[in-house]
Length: 146
Image 1 (spheres, rainbow, N blue to C red):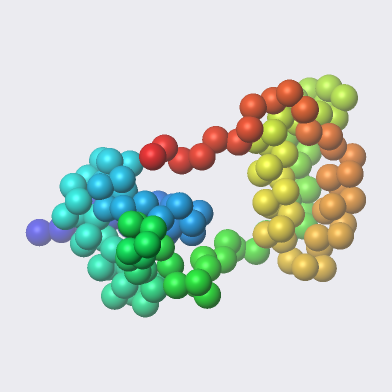
Image 2: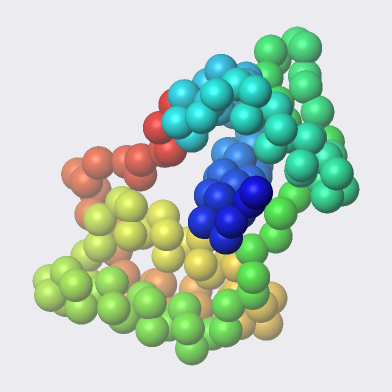
């Protein structure tokens, strides 16, 4: 019998698989299983669940891993201008407004947030980002574990 916690675990894995495949890294079932902490059999069940939901997961023999059909993309929810502006100012506040500098990870995240905004809001948000500068010597953004 499946209880709510098991369903939440599977949903969490499905979302993580979706995001990992969207990165375009073409992981195989062994890599996904290691990353998710589950068996290869569970990874195959999860991939089949995604396919049954209409998501075009495919095995790419030339890449020896899984990916999406080229035209498929999971779109993030649209953020409102005020939400992104608040996040940008929180990021600056966390840095103490020290010269309006943010580290590379925060900068990369802010750029992604701007691109997730409504098209009409992007110009305004880019103007806000013009007030911020990334720190040149901070480490590059981290990627999910492999």
